[in-house]
Length: 425
Image (cartoon, rainbow, N blue to C red):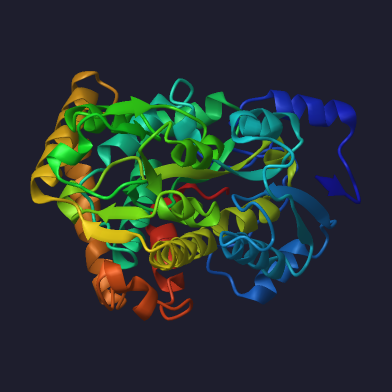
């Protein structure tokens, strides 16, 4: 972060070393800001009131590392929507300097980069680090059997993930222990689908297959199918499928389209809601140690930008799903619903995984009821706002167009009813 009036080295070092309950206050806890954070503004304030709160503040430039690999990436629009909200709401006083392709820190070191000041804001993948984020892994693993249709289902799921993220105190504690501030504690980047180099989704087809798995929740599913789970970095998957080192991957379609995975594995299967796999919530939007040194009004603007993040992510997931269908067809591949018997195996494995999580005490016993309540609520909101699929999955490339649906109203509702209580004040 750069500023026209930087902190002294000593002040910055002290602030970075303290926990999230000190310095300018804890967004995760929704506490009051201390120190010389300055005046803030009400969430629903008009722009004139915001401008007044910012009038005497110096401009700042913050380093933001989004999920996208490049400015031309299919994921880039979500980053630009986030940037636009912050820069426009601040009247240009906050500038986001975008760093593409994890150029400053790979996902394994994002937390460290946020804590030591190399990054101010970043998209992260806590799902890749279950030892540091056991509550994230457990919560993501519990979110199976939820709506998975390529547009409406993704909007509902993202709302439920964000809702559960803010309700899970142990997860917020894990972020605090790592010295980062959650801006959106759980972000879903799409459903998981079997992508294979040979077609077939009946039980016999899975026997003996080597399947690259993306999270702990996929291990039991793979074994129950009679296949062998393989763990590897996502960047290695293309070559592994090409060489036949693995036969399939359980993957999200947005990054699969981005990496042209269907060139070597053009056979895509999809499930019903009841058999949808878990750990679709893989990411989070986080702030680093510099966040608490910012004036309160700047913290509030950045925190409020979560509503634009929601709309941005749902849009790019729908776009990624569509691009995947298009690429499969261009590769002369197949798109088919998973065999009914296979779906039962997956559903049973999902139920067993949830039971294990609860038996191990990783989440409270009321989590299944919270998931059901949240799913019912956000399904109703999606219906109310007219968010629906206009056709079948196989024909997604024929009926979905970017901008056809406006996810901003749902993003606003999700933020106001889940994250707003944690807004810096």
